[in-house]
Length: 552
Image (cartoon, rainbow, N blue to C red; front, side, top):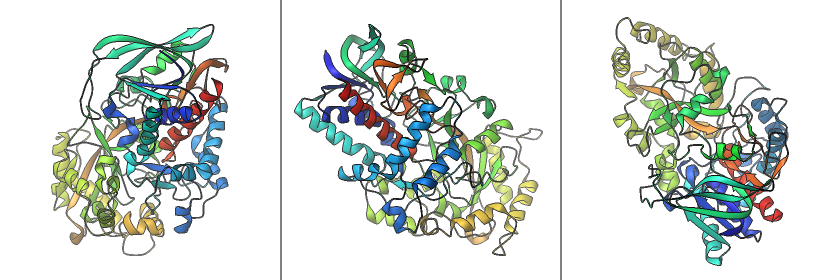
């Protein structure tokens, strides 16, 4: 089988790369080890958030954003090092895209946004450090499936025209090099498997295949479901890796194409940079092994470590993911706790994932308007009722007893929670509520958040006492480390060409999406500003597809 461009991976970056290359006139073959049911990859399961700069949605909400402010936030968050030449260039190019073509390009394909802009990853409390100075998290109307749908539609049109061919259950086992260039791939045909989307499929090989191509694009994703690789590459500055983690991605996110690319001479940059969340909960209705869901928290929950100590300022819910992970690992906390009440969970808890947001995913205006009314969303209430990490009680002493029972912590254990100490912490916090000022930094952050209309409307509860009887019952949620994204990846230039260890492009080889650290081998640096993962797939896939088509 011969083709102009071969794309490995039918996730978002692969779909974008394949459709862009085919629309540019190239003959394209798209392969994936999974079946058609997994078309769209991880993006299908996502909340659909996209990072935009100075968008109409922001301006309508009175948000004053600018390319200069976004650039300062990105660079303050990334912490680029001397070797990050191409990652820095990719970041700058992506910021231009997020301010320029991105929204119009998607809009022309039928993509639409929920009108309320979210304020994710609010930062470390410094003006020039990590975090978003303003809300930039634009939620796709239709969530993850809404992101994927335009590119699936394009792919079907291109398949009908004969310029794109898709082969599912084709696993690439090696890149073929000839005269110093990558000239295609060889691999195994896997047995048909009709398992539902996201469920692990068989790896039984029933045949072999080979494809020659003028250009090969690796868009195979990262390592998030391969916990052995996550631990092997765990960053030294984050302490020891957790003994237990939950998976925020399906099992096929195994990282197997990375060493295959390295065997063909590709250079892997920043393999220890990764993005994992500290607000993971075990899915009571799992799709894949160890399936975890991330809580997208508002700022009001009281955050305690596994010994019942309040997390230090400024580690508040939703503010600084990496700093929180570093703190918890430095103190060897295998889990942490949110302590809150019914009023907070109703206003502030959202769950990451398309399947956890049926109103937005199903594009139901009526159901979505319900988020502004009293009551938690049905998926949140289902987790509160069925989730193994939730404890609900009418008194604080009963709540702490339930927390200890959940972890099995008994007398003498370092992890046993002292109800008297937790009452002291909660009452000290609650004593700061009576005045519109005070010295509790988290309460000040909540008041600041409510100055933004989007937060006040659907995201942040009014300041009140956690122990206020009318706001009950009390709720505790055990939080796990949730694996998610690989921030490092295959080293690429601004044409998405894979580079060798000397920084020289390998003829015929390109990389996009998470496999390329979303561009350059790590365009995020050490931190994400959120909404930038899907956007990185869109941008790097577009660049790779167009560059590969132009080269052949």
